[in-house]
Structures are given as structure tokens and as C-alpha cells.
Image (cartoon, rainbow, N blue to C red; front, top):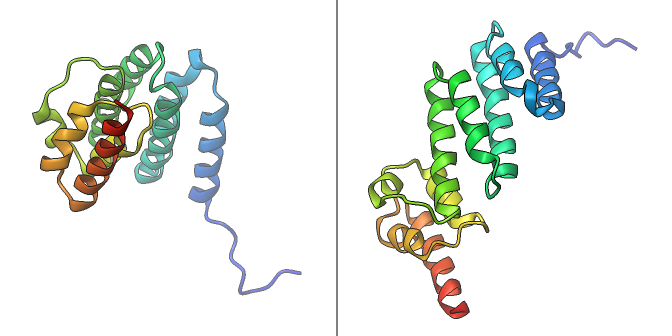
Amino acid sequence: MNSPYVNEEPAEHRRFARHLKALEAVAEESEAELVAAVLRDEDAAMANSAVLRHLDRRAAGLLAGPRFTAWAQALAEVVAQREFLTLRLREWTLLHTIALGGPWDAESLTGASDWLQRKVTSTEAVTSVEALRVLTTQGRIRRVRHAASVRLRHADRLD
């Protein structure tokens, strides 16, 4: 039964769902090409949103592994003209560096978004006592400072 009060789902919603499904299933060697195709969608906001979800999902899965750096470099070229996507990928890269104990500086962490600071305090792969100390005193929001101090107390008990 067709009700005059039920509207069909908008085309951009259907495309968004198709983009997400395709991005979830894409083979690694075709990923950059598919991301570029999604970013050419006529609805830039929707395309950015689909790619952002994909970046977040893939980065989380690759975070502590050896393939993260090559993946991030390949995607950085594709999203280079998209400021927010570039920032998110850069922040995932900083999170990866901190998680693996690589070199990072406090200024990069304190100047990062609330999103990244929350990720540092909530990601199990991040065990950097130094990063938690920085966020305990210099986190941008109270929620981050509190979460960092809780994680830091827990880390101190493990020593």
C-alpha cells in the first residue's frame, strides 16, 4: 500500500549507502581509486561523510599494524583537496605514531582536535604514559583531562 505520507528515501541517501557498502568491500589495491570516485559525487558533503566513515573504520583496523603508513600515504594523495579529510587522516597518523611509541611532540597533541585527544584517551593501543600526562594537564576539554588522568592512574597501577 502506497501512502501519500511516506516519502521515498532521497537519492543522496541511497548513494551514501551504496558508497559505504562499496568502500567496506573494496580490495586494498582498489581502495584509493574507489575513494577518489566517491569524492567525485555531485553531493560533496555526502561524499565527504562517506569517505570520513571509511577512513575512520580502516584507520582503526590498521592502527597498530605495519600497513598503516603505506595506507595513510596512499589515501593522503586522494583526499589532499579535502581539508577536513586531510586533517582527520593526519590525526589518525599522529595516533598511530603515539600508539607505536614513535616520535611525536606535545605541541602536536595539545594543538590537535578534541576528537583526537579523546581517541588518545580511549584507544587501548595507546599506552603512552607521556601522552596521557600531557593530556591530563593540557587536554583541551575537561572530559579529555579526566579520561587521561583515569587512564594514567590505571597505567601507574600496572607498573
